Image (cartoon, rainbow, N blue to C red; front, side, top):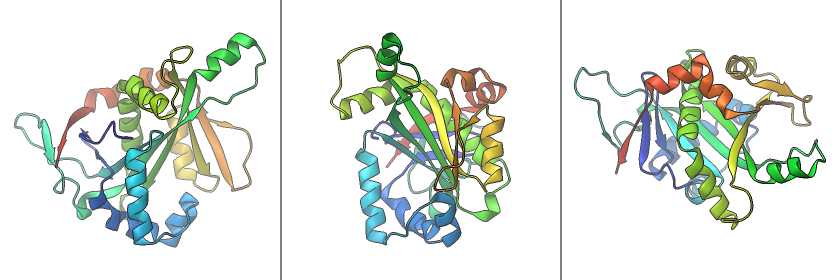
Length: 244
């Protein structure tokens, strides 16, 4: 998505920046790790293919991508309004990535005509997070990144859906579109990630799939916003200009 190309999100635990070409070499190093390939169900790509993916994701209307970096240096001075690309997100500052994918709501469990009509104008967001460095796992960074992303999504949900709907060529059609539920797919062996999302209020839906993954869902983004984790994330959240 282009929505976040000029925005960074600063919190006391993490900084999120848009995924740029400057990040690809470090990202490629991460994704060359067999353990990460297994955890993310990913196939190894060449560096050239990773650059092509980065460009594709930047312009794709259904993928919102961020790189997770260390937090900005603590300072007693006035809060920053602009951060410099290439400094806050230098290779040594990069920790992982977090993404948000948009899908039409395909929950067809109710045949009621009104319910079906509402479902056709609602969308689901999938969260995908990776803490690449083993040294940074188990320290709450994944939790901080997810709660920060969900806060960004809540504050920008209308713009996110507008970019998606426009990309699908559906602008101006039918009922006003809205982002409803959230979901995440996690390897059944990834106990840490399962625990993270369970703490945030996600619940398992269905059984383990063919790929050894479970699906966890939250029926409404508002559930997170009203939670103690959501309130804290909103208090710590600061969106700043990402200057190139």
